[in-house]
Amino acid sequence: MFGISFTFEAKDGLLDRNRILGVDLGVVNTAVLQIWDCEEKKYDWLSWKECKLDGSRIIEFRQRVESRKRSFLRSRKVSGTTNQYSKGKKGRGTQVKIKPIDHLNNKISNFRDTMNHQYSKYIVDFALKHNCGIIQMEDLSEYTEKVKEKFLRNWSYYDLQSKIEYKAKEHGIEVVKIDPRYTSLRCSKCGCIDKRNRNGEKEQAKFKCVKCEYAENADVNAARNIALPDIEKIIEEVMPRKKKEKKKRKRAKKIA
Ligand SMILES: [Zn+2]
Image 1 (tube, helix red, strand yellow):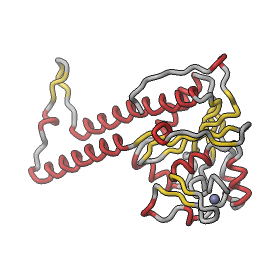
Image 2 (spheres, rainbow, N blue to C red):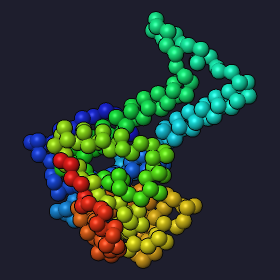
Image 3 (cartoon, protein in one colour):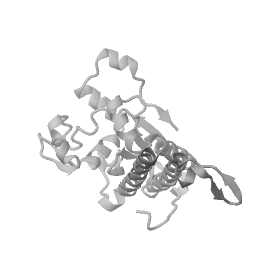
Image 4 (cartoon, rainbow, N blue to C red):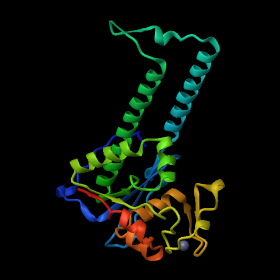
């Protein structure tokens, strides 16, 4: 996906607000993109290669860093000494002391920053290329701890979303955050919401509707739900929130 670098500008500076780009954030796939056209009332056909932002580079990097962290902590325990880094390291003429763990943490944050810049650029360029005036993403800030943790553990969604918002704004694209409740369980074809649509932990990547048998990659299906303009209302009608929950939660945040 990073093979070609392109920057698209919207025709006449006007983007189509009837075309919504849905962004589903995840771990195996950092993001999956789908487009809903409100006038044509259908999803765009997109190739898998084009609509998926692979997360393998991030996963590999994390694993490398984690194992270095572990081996450092182990070696310190065994020998009771510090390693070369803590004794001071030469850097551009000055003597700087960098603790190995800080050094690794810096590496992680620099890598994350670089990757998220690339990802956000790809997503906003994608919206411009396909003439989408709106980008819809999950509002994960108030969502259940379980989901938040799962993602936070693996990557900083917050940083990526901020970068997308910032770049979208520069091009006049509106960013809408929606409640992600049931977006991964809802069938984007017939609307059926059922736990069995996601056949257990073993087959995380697969979605198969128990009602209409629509089968799709789970992230593509979720991104399709996220791309719908009134998805919160649609889901609320089928799965009403308890009153207490409703009060706690504000309506979809709009950032334009
Ligand atoms: Zn279905």
